[in-house]
Each structure stands twice: as structure tokens, then as C-alpha cells.
Image 1 (cartoon, rainbow, N blue to C red):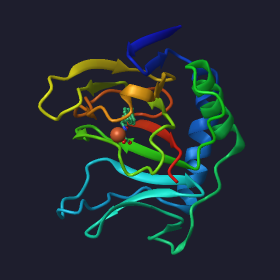
Image 2 (cartoon, rainbow, N blue to C red):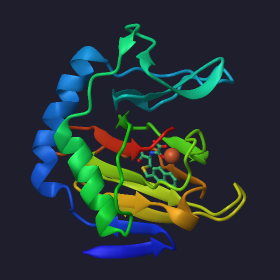
Image 3 (cartoon, rainbow, N blue to C red):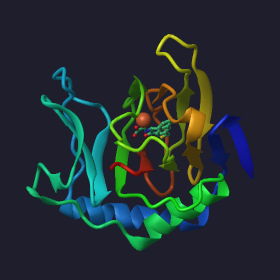
Length: 203
Ligand code: MD3
Ligand code: FE
């Protein structure tokens, strides 16, 4: 089922359900090479969400700012290659939402433990804002906050469940968004954790 959340934002409910176990297995393999870590914001705060990346480019944050980098600063080595099943999923989901030819360069993997949250923000570190972002939710469900063009706009609350895929492009691309503190809950595949994959064209 495809649901328009907003102009340019399409929720594909359960789109990744049949692949979820494989995706989680691949995440565990990625984390053997590029472990989850709590990045520091430019302002010096530790992010409550733990992150890693797969793909040619990875998103990183430190005292110098936010950026995409070919090198994992933890290992000084390239990020683990993006599994072909990841890129194929992102490509087909984007096409289902009307964005043909999506070829992600980066997959940011977010891991939420109970209490972890993402404050309202825009994703604007990507050079090519014509390309959508594809997100895949796995494990414990979360309340996603969907704001407006400014931080002050009132946010809608949208439940994102295991296997849900959302494609964010066009007029939705620079909308402020975030994730509420994760509730303490259990999922058979992930325990207390939620994972979110976001596929991006960064350059
Ligand atoms: C709308 N992640 O990694 S996914 C992020 O659930 C991020 O981990 C959240 O926001 C998460 O930056 C939300 C949905 C999402 C991702 C990127 C977007 C929505 C977006 C970029 C632009 C507009
Ligand atoms: Fe974001």
C-alpha cells in the first residue's frame, strides 16, 4: 500500500518486510567492519542514536561539522561496500514513488536504543537535492515527526513500523523531521532496538 504523507513523501507500508531478516543480517556484517558509534555534534554533544554507514560515502559528524566522507574516521579505511540487495531495494522503492533511476552512494544506518531520539533537523548535506532519500525502518516501531519548511512549524506524528519504507523527495526533501525518544519495547528480530537505513545520493 502506498500512502502520500505529503507532496513528495510516499509511505510504502511493509515494502521491505520480506527482506527484513536479510537486511538485519547484512547490518550485523557491516557493523563488524564499521562498528556503530555515537557521533559528536559540531556543538560537542554526543548523539543518542548510534550510527554507521555502508557505501562509497558515509555521513559523519564531529567538532568540524557534518559531511560525507569516503573514509570511516574510526578505522581510517573505506566504509564497507553497499550490498547489492540494499541498492536494489532503494532503487525499486524510489521508482515505486515516482523517482526513476535512483542510485544511492551512501546508506546511513541509525540504531536506536530505548530513549534515543533525533531532534528536528533538515538533511541538507547532500549536494544533489533533486534526488530523494529512501528510508527503511526495522525492529521496534517509532514515532516519526514530520514538520514543515521551518523549525517552528508544528510537526505531525507518524508511526513507522518494521518493514516500512518511505521515499522523501521533491517538495518534501528539505522538510524538518525527527524521531521521538524510542519507547521501551521488544521486537522478535531486534530486541529493544530500532534500526533505520537511509539511502542517499550525496554528491
Ligand atoms: C525527510 N533518520 O538519518 S528516516 C536521518 O528514522 C533521519 O532514523 C530518521 O532523519 C530515522 O537523517 C528518519 C526518514 C527520513 C530521512 C531523511 C529525510 C525523512 C526525511 C530527509 C528529508 C526529508
Ligand atoms: Fe534526517
